[in-house]
Length: 190
Image (cartoon, rainbow, N blue to C red; front, top):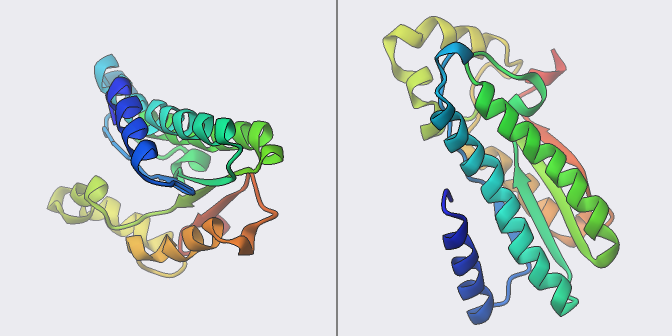
C-alpha cells in the first residue's frame, strides 16, 4: 500500500481479469509517539499507507467505473481517532480524519454517477495494530483506562463491524452515500 505505482498496476490487473463491484479500503499503519518524537519519515509512512493509498485505490477503481458507466460501492475504513484524536497518535488520527473527509468529497463527486462512497469507523478493536497496548505490562494502566471508557466494557473484534460493511455494500443502503458509521461499543456516546 505504500507504493502508488504498484497500486495502479495491481488495480489494473484485477480490473482486467475480474468484475469489481465493491472496494473496501482497510489498510492501517500506526506509529505511537509524542509529536516531538515522531519523525517526518514515520509521519509520511502513516499518511502514505492510511490516506494516500486509500485515495489511490479509490481513484483507480472509481476512474474505471466511471469510464465503464458502472455502478459501484466504496467502503473506506477510518477510525474513532478520526473524530477524537487520541494520544501519541497524531499521524494516525490525521490520516484517518483525512479518510473520513475523502469519503465525503468522493461521495459529492460520484454519488450522482452511481458510485456510493461510505465510511466505517471502528473504535478500539483488538487487532495487530494495537497489540502492544493490549498485551505489554507497561501499557496495562492505559489499556484498563481505555477499556473502562467503553460502555460495553470490552474491546471489539474485527467481526464486530462486518455487518455494517455488508449493509453498506448491499442495496439495503442504496440511498446512503458520504456517511460514516461508528462501531465502538458506545465509546463516542460518553
